[in-house]
Structures are given as structure tokens and as C-alpha cells.
Length: 488
Image 1: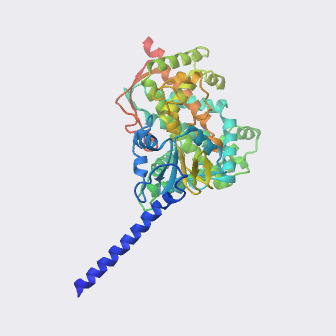
Image 2: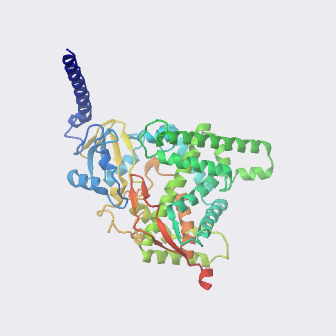
Image 3: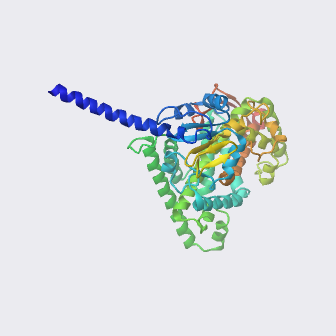
């Protein structure tokens, strides 16, 4: 009798599992049969996971990777897939990418995997939509316009660059990614919050920020001890620290109404932000976190890509060094760089743009179709995700001659704002701090190329995970070559 009951219980459980699995498979494949003749060609892969693991397979950031190479050769530059648990149209086409970016809020809407909004919060400029995004972006553009050419800001960048490089003089080897992050973090914390590296709040924010960053590329499992859960808690602690700094600044301002304080209000980034009436208190805190994120990780990665590619291109490095020696020769000893000096760094801009194109700091962005969208012969169904892949356009030989070579001179005749070059996104979501990042890289390079020689210690390459990083941190053998050292 017991065996009979066990048999039927096992049969019932098996049937239930089969039914659930059938529903999963049906739900996964159902979109394939809807308007099949109109959606782009492609495949959905495995139930639930789809082709996500193949899409995220690590590969060199200056290559397409096997997934895109295979799918573009089989289906063309626009194809369908099942990524991040949802039906997706992947675009490697410059024209369609531009169309998607220009129709933000009309036909498409920002839509990232749960991990991103779960950690950054819904008020982050990266994930916010509609009026909230417009207000945050307008505030960012205003602050960048006010800040970027100010002597105080430029002097801080240069001073931190000199400080970092001075610490190299007795070191035969450095882990450049760590040094770059140290530099960009010091700059952005000073710029946004007015904190120096020596202040305890700076150390506290950095510790939480490192935890925060690790969670952005983890599974969204809010279980104690997981990277995602630790990142969410770190974000709360950073918010509390920022709120305390804001409150301290407000008390100081209210207690001091002198003319000197009024002058400070016109030059201090945080003071300007506090006077923006269009943002709520929580939006201001989120804005600060966005600034830290963009100014820390993205800028330091760009620096690493530039240094890595220059180390492989002696001709470009020599021309860059000559440009900066010329600029320095027109200045007094120890005189700071200014905005006019930055505008003279033409070849430096070419090097930075080429590192952005060839290295691909941002591989793709996430969008969702708000309605059925017809483009050429394609139909992008309402509710489907859309992934404009910038890497594929940047490395397209039909758009860029010798696309798989680092060649800064191409930018002497190529438009930097064209459809085939979108390193900072496009449309209403184009990164508002892109110019600040370029200034930081340019000023750091000014002192690096004149004072040091370097060589990559190993074959470390920029790898897309999908976020780009150097697995070993870009270890460099460095040697001081300043005039003072050579004279000795």
C-alpha cells in the first residue's frame, strides 16, 4: 500500500513539475510566434536565461566578442534574442541606434535590469525617467557649465595629478587602475562635497563606495551577505553621510552671512546644488551619488584605456608628449594649467576620443519600447527591451577605416558628434559630465608624459564583463624621466 501511495505521489509531483516547466517554456517562446514575420530574425536560446550568459561572456573591449560576431553574421546587424529575462531586440546598426537614442521618452524608455535601480535608487539620473530625469539632467548641465572652466576646479585636478605622480618617484611598479581611481575619487569628492583626501568623511565614503560598486554587477538577491545586499546597505550609509555633510553646510551658511561666504556660494559645487529649488532633498543626495559614480569609475577607466593604448603606440605617445612640452614651455615654472591651455590640447583630444572608440567604456545601454515601433522593415513590439550596442558601431570597418587599430589621427578629419561615435550615449541621456572627464584625463596626461616612461608589465587587456576592466589592474613598470632626474 505504501509503495502504491509513493508511486502516485511521485507521479503527481512529476506531472506538476512538467506542467510548470511547460508554462515556463511556453512563456519564453510565445513572443516568437507573435508577428513573427515582422520582428528581426534571431533566436531566444534557453528558457528563462535565454542567451544572457553567451551575451555576457568576457571578451576584449576592443573586439565584438563571439556572441555579436556570430549573431551579426547569421541574422544581420539587427536581431532578436532573449536577454536579462525578457525578449530583446539587439541593434548593432548606427542608424537604428541613433533613432533609439533620439526618441527617448517618446518611443523608448530607459529600462535597466533590477540590480541597477535596486542599488542606485529610482531617483538616480541613470534610471529616472520623465520629469524627474529632465530636472536632474538640467541641474547637472548647469553645474558642469559653471564648474568646468573655473580656476579652482582646474587647479584641484592638476594638484591631485601631481600628488599622485610624485608618489611614483620611488616606485619601480604601479597598479595603474588603483592609482587612477585614487586620483578621480579625490577630484570628484573635492569637486562635489568639498572634502580633501585627509578628512575622515572621505575615507568613510570611499569604503562604502567600493562595496557599492561591487554590487552593481551582482545578482539582485537581497539576502544578508550577498554583494547586492551589501551594496544596498552601503548606498544607504553613503546617503546618510552626504545628508550629514549637506546639513553641516547649511548650518554653516546660515550662521555666516558675510560677504566672504556669499563669494564662496558662487564657487562651491555643493553650495550651488543646495540653491537649486527644482530638486528635492532626496534628489540632491541622489545627484551627488550619481556624480561620484560617473566621476570615479568611468573617468578612471578612460584614463587606464588611454595609458594602455599609448603604451602600445610609441608614435602617438611621442606626438602627445611634444604637444604638452610646447604648452608647458609657454608657462612659468609651477604655473597652473588653465582653460585656454586645455583648448590647445588638440592631439590630446584625438587620443582620448580614439581610446573611447577603440576601448569602449560603455558597451551598450538598456531601453524598452513604449509602443509598437516600425523601423525600416522591422517591428519592435511594445514592451520588448532594446539594446543599442555602441561597440559594434565603433568597431564597424564600414564606418571607421582600420577600425581594429588604435589610430588617433583619424579624428583630425572625423566629426566627433556623428552617429557613428556615441561613447557617452546620445539624445537626452548623453552624459552631462563628459567634458569634465576629458579635462581630468588631459591634465593628468600633461604631467605623466613629461615626467615618466612606462611599460605594461604583462599582457593585461581591457576586458568587457560587460563592464570594462583590467583583470590585473594594468600593472606598469615606471621610470621617472623629468628634466630634474635627467640632469642628475
